[in-house]
Length: 128
Image (cartoon, rainbow, N blue to C red; front, side, top):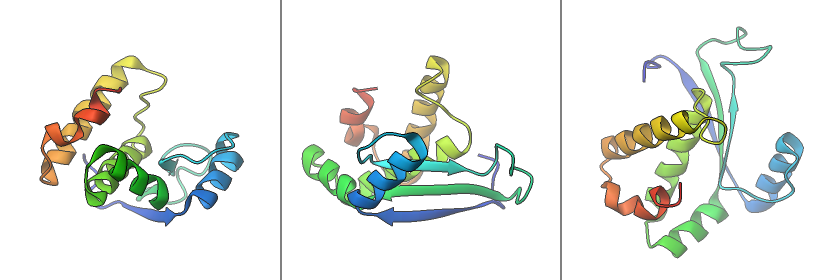
């Protein structure tokens, strides 16, 4: 993806902390599966140009997703991490339909790099 010398931070939290972060930064008072805090944009983008940002994953939500879908917890975490990283890189599936298509393709590509079959995530791709 062109960021071989970049770094990011990954934080795994419980639903209570994820709800707090979601409320504080997005004004949404509930938990979510993954949040991304990009450092490549905004007023501080030039402070540390090699820092992509932060990805926060809810372990509890990931575990629930694993139980609901039958996918392994590792697979779910891989999916959420990829999703979060793509947001750090500027992809926005909620605002731009064309980016949603591109984001889906990148997600499939990166999951394959990690050894996952597309069929394992049919439940995810069928809901987009």
